[in-house]
Picture (tube, rainbow, N blue to C red):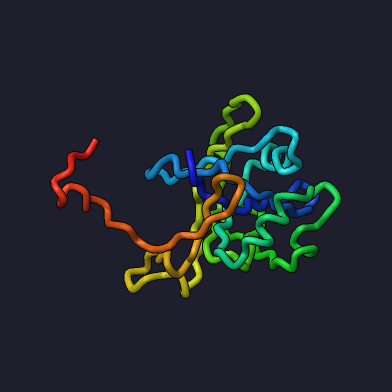
Length: 180
């Protein structure tokens, strides 16, 4: 599958030490209750933290944050405070101890509901307990406007931005195409 969403997941260990991991194996899993899945390699520092605490925050960065997103994925949080090193603002969550990244326009506070071993990665299924979105990325109906939020995707070893709407859901039916 390509491209895939790319996000920064923050977590907080039992001793209060925060970490950020860049992940591209991320996706929506359920609408009711709202759930998201993140796949993390077992040897990653964040894996142990999320496993031990049972919570994490999915922070959806904008295109302007590509550099910091990439850097957070290239260095380990075992010995480095990524919030401090990259000038990111930790913001207290409302439902979980893990901190939100203040610079990200959208944040999802999650509690682990299930862990599924898959092979090289474990899938953490998280129930979304709270959603935070900057006012500046919302449309007039209070929904996230992708053109304003400017999320990124990952594919072919590169980060990609969105270039605008191609068509609304159901537009293919209007053109006489069958849906599968």
